[in-house]
Length: 79
Image 1: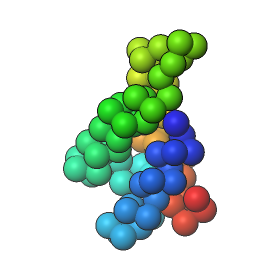
Image 2: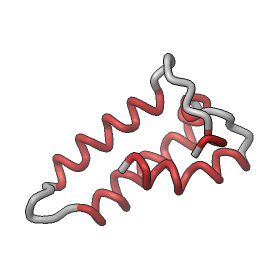
Image 3: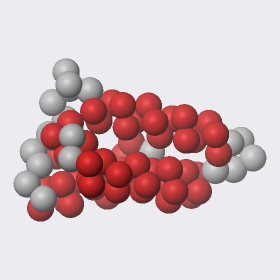
């Protein structure tokens, strides 16, 4: 979930002028897009008998919290 969302959003974030994940996630539109990507697209891709939808959504929320963490300088160029 972390790698998929990183890979998919890194180019978009850079084109939008964001240098870090927390900077991008501070933007309401980018944050909403990333949340929908994770909760609607990626969750539906990885759900299975062993990965329940609610477990995947819970993990997605944790990843989004990590992106918003003010103490992590997650550079898009390092992806």
